[in-house]
Amino acid sequence: MGILQQAFHKGLQIVEPQHVGRIAQPLVGIGMHFEKETVGPERLGRMRHGGHEFAVAARLAARRAGALRQRGVSPRLVILRCGESEADGAYLRGALKRGALCGVEVEVRTLPDTASRQQLLNAIDAVNVDSTVHGCLLLRPLPPHLRDAEPEICDRLLPEKDVDGMTGTSAAGVYLGRPLGFAPCTAEAVTVLLEHYGVACAEKRAVVIGRSPVVGRPAAMLLLARNATVTVCHTATADLPVVTREADIIVSAAGAAGSLTVSHVRPGQTVIDVSVSWDAARNAMVGDAEFDAVSAVVDAITPVPGGVGAVTSAVLMRHVVLAAERGRK
Image (cartoon, rainbow, N blue to C red):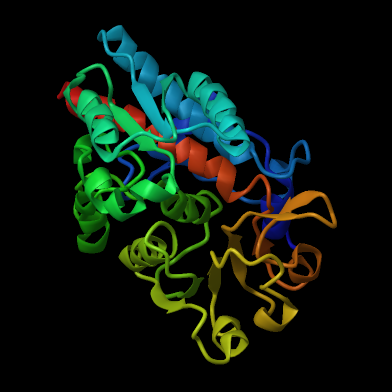
């Protein structure tokens, strides 16, 4: 197992504040800085399965949020949901905790699962006109009776408060490479991880498995913006292992546990496993990759849980801070 693979798999020592200015590198599309690790044995600290990247990003976001509070602005995120579920509850508890670590106030507004289209639109309108709210996250999927109206509902939110890239304007910004709204947090987390660990995209071949508008497509556009040569694969792709073995970077967002096997990879690759599935037999969350087998071959791979998911939360909170900064100007 190489040093970079160990870094992804086990985490690296957090960089101390006095070193931030020296090693911080700008990230396109975030407008903030993310500490870039120098990968090496001296950086290996406590062995953890992910989470280090969030800790680094949280500290930086908290600094920016603290500067805003000194100017009388408290970054604030509203999470809208229709109905209550156990899965939502776990996510919301995590969001509240991570928001506190990043200096972001998080408020949850819950509508009944029977809420009408107009009730949800009214809730979004209330967010739009509230100058103390800087970002809004709508939990999806919506109840079945609202799904046909989802495009209209998503586009009701002001792009400047769309911190998870759900509006058409934000999508246009990703595809056009312009600062319109924000990219979907999970897609952006892919590039944040690559940048954090010093994995170059320019002149590299990247394969994205999955074409959803939430992860696969925007991730492909963000990689393209970093001068990677990108191939998007999906369920109709012929000879997928042949395609993936040609890549330098694999982003797997298929949502199919165990679908990325040793037949898909070769030495020298970096694998970003985006998907999260529940493996009842193992009583554990797993990704697309057969982790033990694949990690023995590739140079670097993100763990599930603890890889992309943790960074996605960090990106969300940093988007809120950035939205508050933009609103202050």
